[in-house]
Amino acid sequence: MSGEGWDCVRGEIFGLAVDEVDVDAQMVHVVQQVKEVGSRLIFAPPKGGKFRDVPLPDSVATALAEHAKEFPPVEVTLPWGRPDGPEVTRRLYFTTRFGNPLRHQTFEGIWKPALVAAEVIPPPEEPGKFARAPEDGMHALRHHYASVLLDAGENIKALSAYLGHSDPGFTLRVYTHLMPTSESRTRGAVDEAYRKAGRYRDGPETARMA
Image (cartoon, rainbow, N blue to C red):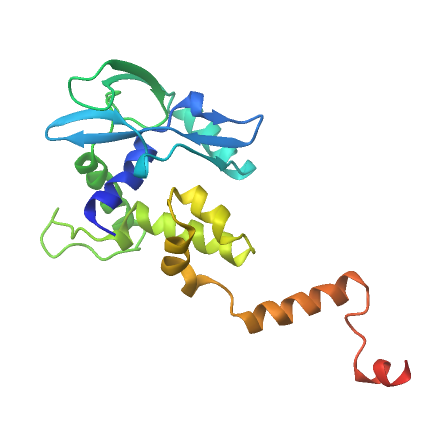
């Protein structure tokens, strides 16, 4: 993925507003990102210009509520679409300690040291100089999300919609290596059928007796 793609992934997180999280419907409406245009920050449509809805698990809703309790959401006003666009105000979940919208550089200065402290990545050879790598950033979390859904049996078309891809075929090409093999699915499907029937422990002897 290009650097611009990484920025879109993070930008959607930076732009997550309270009004877009529908706890009752258990959905997140992805309708914007915080984007850098030169030295200016703006609100812009999400990745690929695709507005989309993503299921909101209870665990994520709880985590957001706990975060909002400790760090109350802040109203942020930015131009929409372009630096001279009309101003819009959103109450964002994630801002700086001064209540400003997050920039990618600001985020890196917090995220990378946190990964070092958690021993996820090694300290940089030169203090403060971290390599720009997708495996260390939000894209890794996006990749993990895709792998969890595929492992649970979610279909490619649904996953593609959740990730904001315009073509399910692209999603398949990118994430096919994470999908269970057909052999594994076959064994799992048959085993599950026997479990539901209460006959999983029956073996060849039972078959011969039948």
